[in-house]
Amino acid sequence: SSLAPAAGAPGWPHARGPDWTGQSPETALADEWPAAGPPVLWTFPLGQGYSALIACGGRVFTQAQTPLGQFASALDATTGRRLWATRYDDPFDPEGHWPGPRATPTFAQGRLYVAGTDGALHCLDADSGRRLWSADLAARWEGARRAAEGARTHADKAAAWRMAPEVERAEREAEQAF
Image (tube, rainbow, N blue to C red; front, top):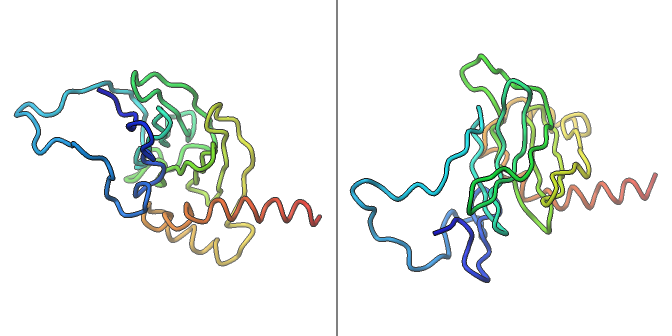
């Protein structure tokens, strides 16, 4: 058994699934679990945070923090082995009531988009974890600063994931203009 989707299946590329509905298109799912629960395929200690997992292309992606910082990570969906981890920020509120990242990454066209607790959006190469670009949304758009400071929950950031490809396009256009 594996977390990898069936051939041709879209996987679970962002917070609410392939169609943003929170419903899986998979078929032949179990109607009930065994009394002892489903079998554990693997575990991996990530650290602090509230990021959900996404799965696509035989990989699982998430965000978490350790005392060394906040990281985006890719794990092999079959074995749970860490493929890469990219540090993108300092730890957020490590001793507080709600430490660590709140956002869930989004996968699109070979790229992984992650949002930091500071309002920055990062685009990573999904195969290597190499940072392709970062945008400080809070600093660039004054209204986004208030939104980033007041909306640090996964639900509030879900709309940002839908606009990540548009942000990237705007970044390219801005670079070409200047």
